[in-house]
Image 1 (tube, helix red, strand yellow):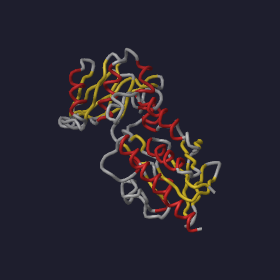
Image 2 (image 1 turned 45 degrees about the vertical axis):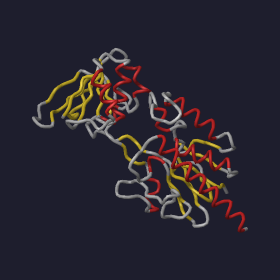
Image 3 (image 1 turned 90 degrees about the vertical axis):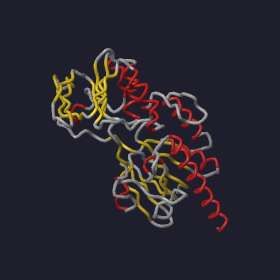
Image 4 (image 1 turned 45 degrees about the horizontal axis):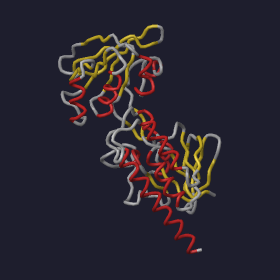
Length: 307
């Protein structure tokens, strides 16, 4: 019987592991990817306090090393279901089941798809959701980035250091990104902005991306871009399908919590991007994880005193 199972090794999960394991709890962190979550696909982090500018993977590694330094464990696991038995919980993975007193859901979000024909089959063959990971494959080539938020613009700036040209496709006539990032994009000669446009059709050749047709959202006029890479950054959806039976999510799939990060099911907590809130940043994820980890530690201590 573990004290705490944390689902997700992003900033929220790692912060919770740090606080809980430092307080003496037996903690296991499960994740189906590399520790650090979306830090691993962020070229630079400029708004994390204390770090003027740091590479995302570097910050991820630092968090991971510190989180496990007090005895917490981390292992690979694809969580399929969480079962509430009241006094304890079961976390069922594909090939293992863990029993634990408390569960923290810090599973984060996944990239929203464009819902275009051939998108699935061309993922990894020209379509990528990680510019940092796959950008170098498109050196001196033309690529398209879809989206008008911070992620899309930041990835465009990164790709512009590698690629011949970056076509930034923005659905609306305004950006949703911070003004400082917008200014950088507009000053970059290698980034061509297509406002009021949406992706319409993916062109392929030899089972690889060979172009993208975009459509003007007002005139419906179409334009073909000769790109070999497409990077969609059009939004995120929470990863909460494994807790559908618990009925703890809102209509969008995010998890509401109280100020201690506890859901409406006692002993089950949520933190980070998967939680219902207005701002999803590294710093707010760490905040959530710290609160949850400390509160769960206090619950465990109070329970031991009662015994």
